[in-house]
Image (cartoon, rainbow, N blue to C red):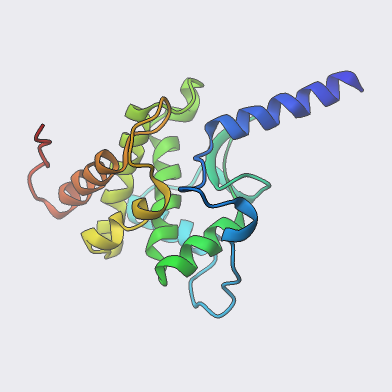
Length: 192
């Protein structure tokens, strides 16, 4: 019994450690709203759109879960994308289209396809930027404008870099880099 409880606590701490915090000073209980009136496809259909443009078969499972937002993880040698449907509904209502939800899902797919979940090092700014670049590439291939591809970062990314996630500007640039690669344009160069 004690081992089960300890395992549950450790699992919860691990999930919280790797999930992005909610933006700004918004509390979790008041940010989610009903999106039943929006005509955005459900998460499984959005994931199918992403995988179709990669040309790859999905070797991970998408599951609704009691997570803060959305995350790529591995459990018992199986890959998962775990998502909170209320979080997806919240971002969809804010942006009024499917692009933010697609960006979030593509970002998590990018973690899996770039091997980030195999490393078991947790989130780092460099890994997050790789996943953002992948998301930008995928969103271009799905027909999103650069602005639509980057919009989600206005709501979820903090301005400053943390120990686990890059700042908003760097994330926007990474998305632009991936989007530009897919468009056949030159790589974006960061000016400092």
